[in-house]
Amino acid sequence: MSRMSTAPRSSRLDPQLAEALNDHVSVEARSSFLYFSMASWAEVRGLTGFSTWLRAEASGELAHMNQFVDHLNDRGFQATFQALPQPRAEWSDVTVMFEDVVAMEHELAGRIDALIQTSHDKRDHFTGSFLQQFVPQQIADMAEADEILDRLRIVGRDGQGVILIDQELRARAGN
Image 1 (cartoon, helix red, strand yellow):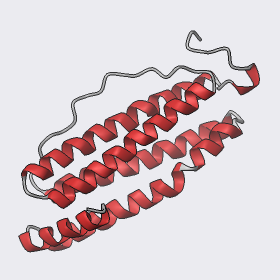
Image 2: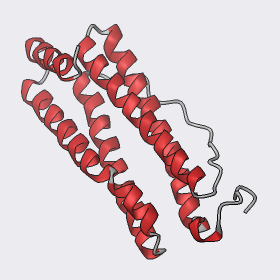
Image 3: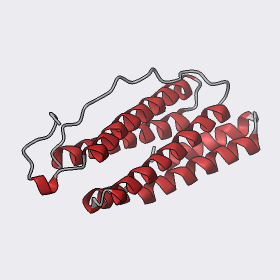
Image 4: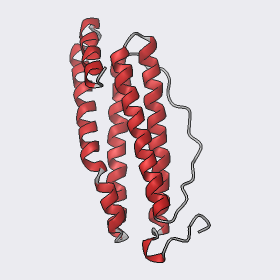
């Protein structure tokens, strides 16, 4: 593969696993852009706590993308980047938006799980170890997104309830 470096053969990634990891780089970037789009949507609607929380999540996804790029590079593969689709920019309300958050976080968890399985199948314990660091964070991210969505569903369209959740998210994000 032309993207391989001169890393020692024993440290190189299996090409199929490398491609799967490289594809995940784009998944993390797409997730980050969607979070940024959601943050902008929330900000212009006066939901600054949601916006702050969503921006923090976007930054986290970019950090994950960087970790995947570093792992690929360290293992002798140059990361390549796919064109990203334009993220969704409109939601009818914050609950519908959080349904997308939950779906995305569960998708990311499934993808991490599949990558761990592929690394196991390829007997690549280095990559398996690298991927394990994402499991606790992904579990926490899914639980937090699920909890916020549950609470939004409880308050429904009650503006006071949404504002209380907005204030709590601002506090969670440290602002």
